[in-house]
Length: 563
Ligand code: AMP
Image (cartoon, helix red, strand yellow):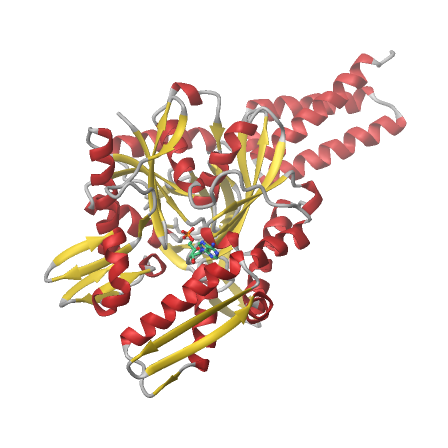
């Protein structure tokens, strides 16, 4: 069975397969590899791709583009008397991709890996999975777009140790990720972005400017579409040249304008500021400086704009690497991921890890004055934590006579839970307190690559466990897959402090401390303190790095030890 990856883009969608020669794009019915993510409805018939795109101008009221932006919302589009949601519109594009790939490959296409912006919430991811199912596909995995892009670029570099930044500016979304390749393992260190910023916004800036220069009485939807098309053409032209001119003469609308690249860049200054923020945040989260990066990789059509490239060169002090077409990287990487899921032989040495894009946690209360206020967010798994991960926190009941704790489970970055996304609620029965003291519970969150979140709450006085599983939402998991994922999460649930290897390491440090004298003693007591702090933080990669360093130091000490 072919290993298929799909990039469901805001502007264009692509489908690729993993072959023994690496990932390859599959051409559509028109022989191209970019299928416009546009839907046109005519007398009940649904058209997609180039056919639909060509109607954007002539039949704007029956045609829709950029609907990926409204994934996960209730928005419905009215097209020639037919109401369609963004899930249904995406399903139409996916169905066309599936049919084209089936024609090209001569076999059914069902299992696919689909890319999504790293910044998509669980609800938005669920919408993508739903669209895939509607199109007759089985989404075996959803992969973050920058991770996919890095996979397309990173394969060639796996032998070298490197750290790179993926700058992905598509039609409607912006994602930045930092990935590290180390001993054949590719790890996402951090990701940030803006789900409402993309090439479209640069076009809109020009649309606003051009509309201001146009003479008209009332703009019809056809007039608006004509200005939009002129703006889009002008934007593309300004990538190639220092200035561009357009002219529109229609009944009731005249527009003649010349814009220089410098003027366009001035108009876009607020957008460039918005591009900088996620870049700064991702470096901060990954604890890196621009000079620590080996490479900056570009993804998404809008990274072709010279102002975006010079922003990167200025702030990251790197000339971006673009040896893969920025429009192709995500689909190629999704196909590589499909090969990984399908355990393709050529990929057996590649290991991928990913991070959580959002923080996961629970609602807590805080005592303010002598009043108890609810609604505070306590993150348990912080954003950008490498998955799979399992973390524990302790909570206290509010009153001694409390018989139940109702735990709201949330995803997001706001300190106020109402601004975050509610994933579920867990009701935990509490044993009656005998001595009037408050009950305590431990809350453990375990999260895996396929997006399965397990929440286990243990009441400390009687050791009773209450659990819930929040399924992603991401792929389409069968009961069997869920059981498998749950079993592997089970292994993670041991607190690192209780893991065999860590117990042994702590004992060895204590032993070295006992053997050492004077200055050496402080080395080992500091080592113990650092180890305890890392055990508390429960970050597996930090712990692994610490273990390696501590063992090297102790080996040296033991080898040179004189009785
Ligand atoms: P994507 O969603 O990755 O296909 O990105 C598409 C976005 O890139 C759209 O907003 C396009 O207008 C923009 N884009 C594509 N090519 C160019 C170009 N040569 N110059 C400026 N923007 C471009």
